[in-house]
Length: 260
Image (tube, rainbow, N blue to C red; front, side, top):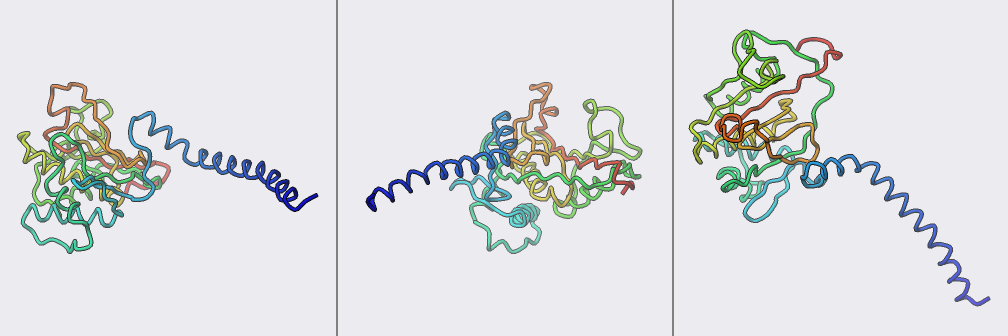
């Protein structure tokens, strides 16, 4: 037997082993990623982006950010819009800040998106005197610190029991509507300033859903994508959330104990 034949035999024996190894790796990857991939295919959105927690679609292309950068950028442009002092953003791509400040072009939808990661260890909470749960009240206060005085609705002392859809989070005191009326391009831009800020801070503020301008974002979806919002009446700008940003917080679980 020649040396060439011996090496050739070894190569032939190695090929089935290599094929089995590749098959095992592929199977393992599908087990891990399969549910997310299938969910993305069903919903018609892009597959998950595992590289960046957040992304911003700019005129120059898509820019990835970590969550801290997204929070800094959205806070800076919101404060700048009020004429308030802004934090240092020298480490953030200028095209990101420009897009967030200008808002999405025409009817492009959201410019910034972040991965959802709904907390699973929160206790369920009851209404406070404001008509909001403590989590929702904390959210309201956080918005006021950055955006100042806002036109709010969707809650009232003692709670609300009508005026919203069936099983609405407004009835639990977990939702706030922030109005930007009338529906104009300038108000639309200001609405997106808030919507982007809410998504960037969703993990810290236990945000569950953000709805605005025919789009919605969910903390329960890991795809880091906004989706089209199908209003029950396409001719109604209120139901389409064209004149207000809806934001609600996670319910929590009664099994966790305490009312917060």
